[in-house]
Length: 203
Image (cartoon, rainbow, N blue to C red; front, top):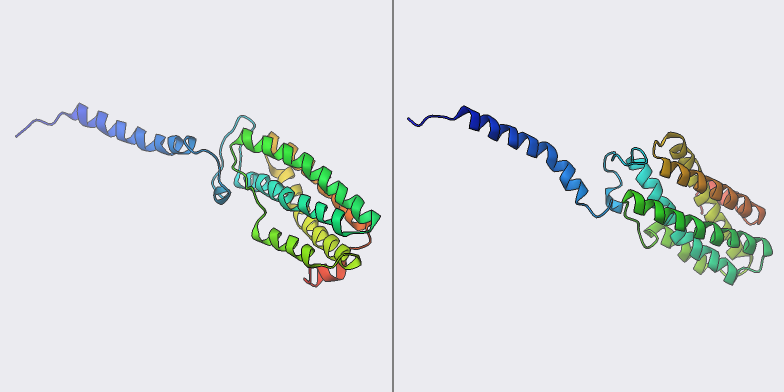
């Protein structure tokens, strides 16, 4: 009967165990980025602090906001005759131009993959704006859709700002919070927001 080399078996077992423990680390580091579909992945340690699924979701949502709200601002410039609507549109264009530059930088630093086009719901918002006739009806649809969208994301940004331990995400959330509040204020100044339609789910 052949002799069993116990030392060799122990070494082989230890090597297998170490390899199994190390594999998740190697497999993650080989990824080119955190895809949009992977924003629910677990927490990753970075030099700026832990990066959670909620942190990644905020980064993606800030990018998405700019991808549809900037075109929405351009539509108002073209279709509205209201000075206050055009002023609000200008705030959208400037605010999201600045935020988009910041979010792309943060995403690159944290290795988070960003979308390059609005999602289906946001494309639907833009289609509603295209379908609205120029003038007061356009202003109502435009301002109401945007006010609802900003009102929805505002508390989410504040929550991430409060709980994140990642310094880059915290600063992005701070910047986003200020921009969203400015946009809400400007949209309400237009006098075109249909709060009843928003409350009743008609917008």
